[in-house]
Image (cartoon, rainbow, N blue to C red):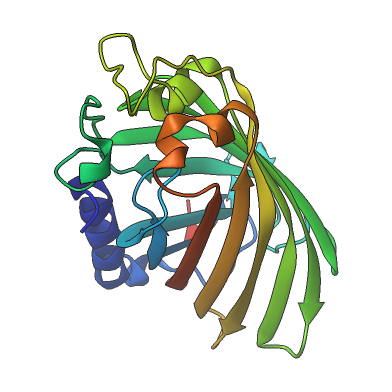
Length: 257
């Protein structure tokens, strides 16, 4: 597996299926929380700029509704309208052990990113964005913007697809695309990378809703590294084109306070 933190998080998400069901609330009105919890297998580049893919478990969490006893609320339980939710991502370690083409570069520890995501959705369209701060492997900020056209084939099957933009500040960009003076060699000249737009691409996916609680999702994406990230000598060892594939299972929980 790609890294221990994502494996542990995925295991906890899967274990929750057996622990939380008894806390379901049949009435989702009033104070309470509604959310989806699940786990996915995701194929991603081994490191930013790599051409080979690795499979990693990824935890899934989506907040549908939160209403506190004092009246504060986020979301209404449905997918439509404006919503806020936590945004979490895990970036696996990068080392010569797994990527010998990067010989001479210092290993980068696993990074955990924590932040917030926002989305506005109608029946056939949505826009979304997220911003996260890294801990561990990098201590910069990373964000995404995207938009989707949504097509509902029937009550159970929904398709979506649209553009994606990925951003990072200079700390993030230099961690994964820069080369320090101490690392510099004939293969990897010293490189300083500026922040900004890291990549742009497209993503498409589908969701099949079995019933009110269970669903499966699948997706595929392509992005093209841009600017300094595309010119990095690290990217030169792999590819400017980055691909992803994923398949996940989710369960909805409604818990009253």
